[in-house]
Length: 157
Image: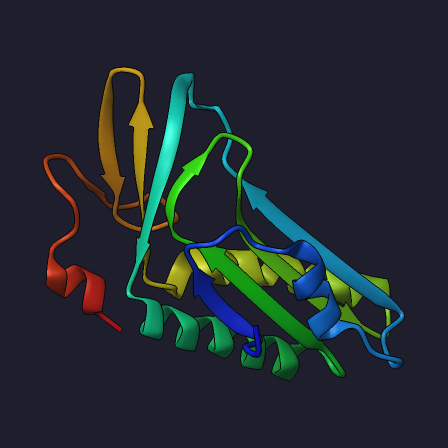
């Protein structure tokens, strides 16, 4: 993979993300790995399905990398997010941030996952034992009770 920020329907290689930010100037590399959990608010998840407006999502992931570079000096960031059907414990997202010092790496990594939830056009469908629901945004402020998001919802910038 020659991209620094990407959407994929394949298993994410954590070491690939780490290798993209490994450099001599870095004294710390923080890696955040988001996985599919079995229980959410007492409901048992069977599996998740992610969909994305991939080209826009990759631009937004790159924007997050630029934001991190402007907030924390001398950083390098790589982010990969998976789409498609994910089973319990599968990796959904990997964020790797390298910085000269560890505190910046921790803070920048946290910033990245929060920004992904705020601005990246990725939708999640929860599949429970007794039903399904599209989650409209990753902060879970919007849900779609009857169907998946409309096309215009998936193309908004």
